[in-house]
Length: 138
Image (tube, helix red, strand yellow):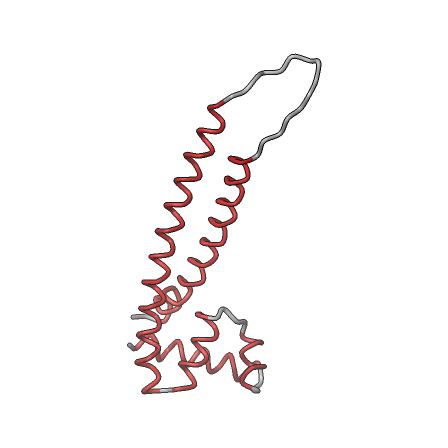
């Protein structure tokens, strides 16, 4: 595995989490659309009740919910794969495992990692680069 492939594999977990969050927000929006009932009183004629809008909202809600559950399954699979490789990496280099876990599983920035480990930003970047190299060798 090349370094770029290793980075892509590690970043895929964070992308799935972001997509899950977006899907959750869409589900909340659709739920509110399905349960939104407003009564307006006016002496002006209106277009009337349109059940098609509600049916479409419910269908969209079902689709988004299915998409969300598929994303959850994908997230579990990706996380398990990465965790397995990180556990193998622990036998070789503990620091590399810690840095990769904080960066790609806990989604911390390099600066937060440096602060947590009480090292300089430059050293944290160096450790991350070395850790990705070790990860790509697995």
